[in-house]
Each structure stands twice: as C-alpha cells, then as structure tokens.
Image (cartoon, rainbow, N blue to C red; front, side, top):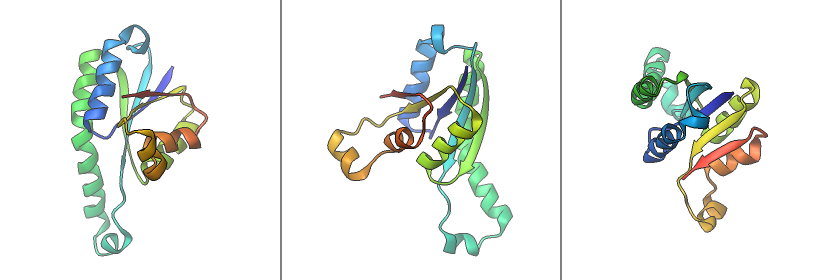
Length: 140
C-alpha cells in the first residue's frame, strides 16, 4: 500500500508517528511511505528581492528541519520511506499530490480543534478531505 503522510514537525506529527509505530501490525514496514511537508510560500514582494538560490535554500532548510527526525524514525521502525517537500498551500498541495501520486491512504495529524473553530477557520485536514477522494486517517 502507498501511504502519504502529511507532516509539519508539530506535536501532532509526533502523535501521528507514535500511532504508526504502535500499530505496526497493519501500518508497518510492508508499506511504502511518502513523508510530505508543505512549506508556505514566501510572499511575492519578498520573493521578488531574493535571488532564486537563497529562496530555494530557505525552502530546503525549512523542510530539512522537519525531515531529519523523520528519517531517524523511519530507520528505527524499518519503514520504506521517502521525503518530499513542496511549496504552496498545505491542504491543496496534499490533496493534489494524493490524487496525482496514486496513493492508497493519506495519514494526517489533526490539531483536534472543536467543530466551531473548524467552521470559522477551517483546518488543513478538513480541506484535504473536501478536495480529495483518497481515504484518509486522521490522528488526534
């Protein structure tokens, strides 16, 4: 099974990884994992004054801070995984990658906001579910 794990380095990502580790009987090393992090784009006016190498370095450094502990986790758990960084808006990018990549499952850590705050602000998880037909596992 191809699994897309959306990660952002937050405590919710750590909870999601703990869940994967605790349920290795059905989420274990027999699957192929892609760890996806989406870096928010630098505002256009700021990006216009930066050279492309500096901007690319910023995005790569931001992603590497998230990926470094994930690589350690994957190695300890014996998971076949790859790390992918995209620049854009998180929910749209996750849903698009899930569609185009032919993933069987999306795994997301959820912040666990209440229904009222989701109604007012929305959440990445809610937007991914609305924009994608791939099954998703939300972990609080």
